[in-house]
Length: 114
Image (cartoon, rainbow, N blue to C red):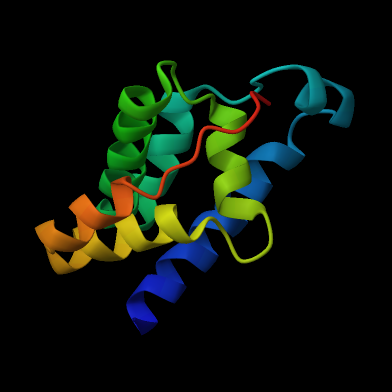
């Protein structure tokens, strides 16, 4: 669990740094950081962070019928202590826990598009 917290904290900080390079107005209006860049940053932190985010993205597409935007993924990492489903998927990937992955993807909600 400690590894999970470190992965997520570093992931959130990395994404905040990526976001800081873009003017605030552009951040609000656009997916200013391409999804592949967000995933690459997560992969640089820890392979399980990227794999967990990719699992979250695929499950979101299947459950919600649309693609997750890069901004939505960043919000899932940044808001409060992070989306428990996303963070749990990262931990499940690190632990290679297929049962936890299956359970967690059922907790994905389809909110408003950001």
